[in-house]
Length: 298
Picture 1 (cartoon, rainbow, N blue to C red):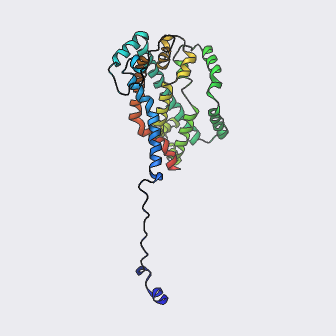
Picture 2 (cartoon, one colour):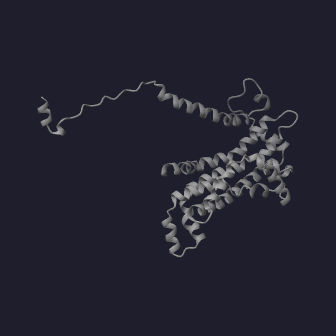
């Protein structure tokens, strides 16, 4: 028998079909990760949902038990109350947008330029300088508060938008992100070829490098804009004139003595968060591409 089997061609001996194990229909390994993700998503989205719901209700409805779970019809009343108590509200939204836009543009330009230099140029002390730059990310934010305020006072920038735009014009995280992305996405041969063709150094950066780093620019731009737009502590440190308050400071100033107008605060929060939602919807794909590019390319 064994002689007969060994004499047959290998192709004629078909392997026995594997029997697939049928997973349990309600196995915890299948539904538990999805359930955890769903619970986490609900916990994250609940404050946003109730912010919009409370923006359409009066204070009495918001403080009732149980609180309202669906939208009401007091949105414009809350907005009118907000503007009546803080007439500078719309100006503060404009200031927040201006500060976030200027910081984002400067951050994209300076960080991409720094990342290009660290990734494409060989110079003495480059690695030590980059390590020192990365070490600044380990410092707690409150360590620099007092020097920051003193510097702004010496420069005469208190109660000025420059106090929030210039210090946020370049970040260690942005340079790190750009260095990593440019090092993996821009071939050195391409830069050398442009250099041999007579293109200047800034021309290489502007015409060759920038068009290739769109996902990283989108990611850094979105992160910078959101961080600058929501910068509450920085504005609290350098802005003392109410006319120069940003939107987070104006909304916080409503929580003083007396009855807090929660409906007006929720309406103001809903209005101020709308630009961020629109921006995220438009550029969320770029954000995901930029964050996953390094992991995919290894």
